[in-house]
Image (cartoon, rainbow, N blue to C red; front, top):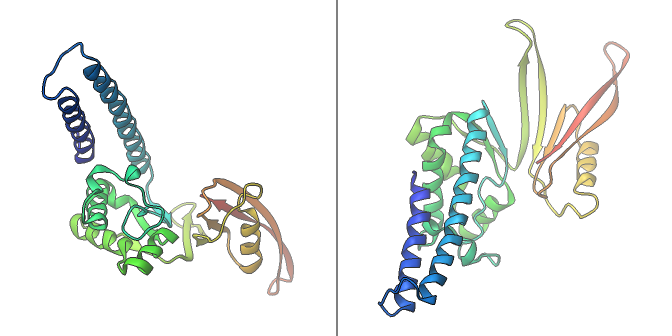
Length: 248
C-alpha cells in the first residue's frame, strides 16, 4: 500500500469514527440507527477509495507498458488552489487539502512518478500549467521535472505550449526514416458537434512539412488522416502523402 492509498483509507476511517462518536454522543450501540448510518457511509467511502486506487493502478500499468511518454499539456489539473474560480473543496484530494496546495501536488507527483521517471521523455505546457504561472507566478511543470530528475537521475525535458518532434524511426540498424510531429496543446472550445476538428484543419492549413499534427485541450480523442499533394522541385514530381491528425 502506497502513501496515496494509506492517506485515502486512513482519512475515511478517521472521519467515520468521529462521525459515529458525535452522533452517538460517545455511546456506541451496535444496533443503533446512527451506527448503521455511519456504517453505510463508511462502505460507500470505502468503495470510492478502492475504485480510485484501482484507477491509479491501471494508470501505473499503462505508463510502464509505454517505452517513452510525451505529454501534450495539462499534465496537472491545479484547479483547487487559491484564486481559481473553479475550485471546490469536494474535488480536492485529502493529502493536498492544506496551506501548501501547489507544493504538496509536486511532492505527490514526484513520489508517484519516480518508478516511471525513465519512461517520461517530454512534458509540454497546457492552459492549466500556464494559468498557474500567470496567477501564482510559479512554474509547477518545471518544478516537478527538476525535482524528479534530481530525485531519480532521470532526464525529463520540459517543452513548450507547442513545438516540433523530429523522430527517427529505424527499419533496421542501417535504414531509417524521420517522422516529424507538430504538437500544440490547443486553445478555445471544441464544440459539441465539431469536437475540435475545425481547429485541426486550421492548423493543417497553417503548417507545412509535418507527418502528424497533434492537439489536446478540448477533452476529445480521435484520429484523422488527410491526403495532400506536394510538388518536389528537385525531382519535378508530384508527391501524394498522408498527414495524420491526432487529438488527445
